[in-house]
Image (cartoon, rainbow, N blue to C red; front, side, top):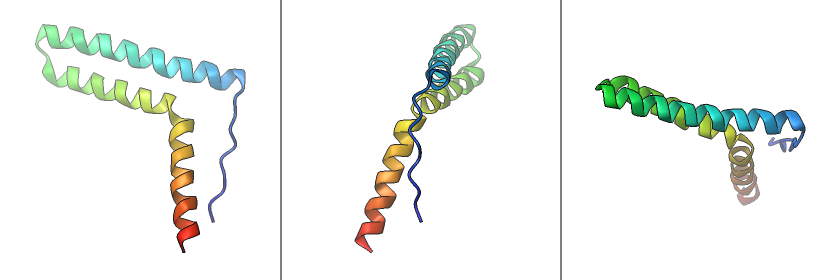
Length: 77
């Protein structure tokens, strides 16, 4: 059984989303400075952290697409 996720658009959710984006930007700039120093492993690690922060900011859209996929699969059966 697939339950539909509640779409919360409160002020707290907007702040959390903005902080995810802000942390992704910080991770990108820190990774760039690590790359200039020559520390490739830490740069890649910080870019991965930035990527996951971007995914965190898109959490409601990702959940929406997953729900649509599972509802589509359920209708086919």
